[in-house]
Length: 202
Image 1 (cartoon, rainbow, N blue to C red):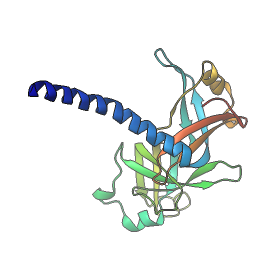
Image 2 (cartoon, helix red, strand yellow):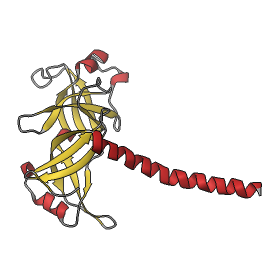
Image 3 (tube, helix red, strand yellow):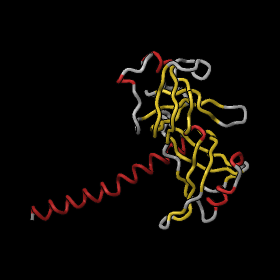
């Protein structure tokens, strides 16, 4: 009897974990969509197809390919040079501070290997390749320490209604905008895509 209870308890625990983890992830995304700071980002797309999940777009963000992006003041103070402990590795977190541009789009302004101070608008990504460099051309890297490379933010795949990803792909680069919501720790969720300012699906 006791063995049966233990087995049933184990199965119940597994079921809770199996359902609980996905629900926890969904709840976190929903909280960001509900309470996160809304920004718009530039992007380019292509239109692959997943046989099991339908049409989707792979989104390439302008802030995903960075060149000579100045380090934050705090980052420069933490690592004025690049000793081994300040080297950037692939898949390592990087925090990109965002600033509004005149056209309503947000663009990368600074980068750091540590989370910026509360109240700073930033997005958390992972380094695909590249890293922080020191010195070089002062005109391109006025801070003396800059990040160059590719960063993924976890919002690169967008699944839309049938035919819509193809429509997104056919649109000119300057016609497509991503609406993204970001929580205070830089975690981002893709809320919508706009073509010429009109939402094309959630």
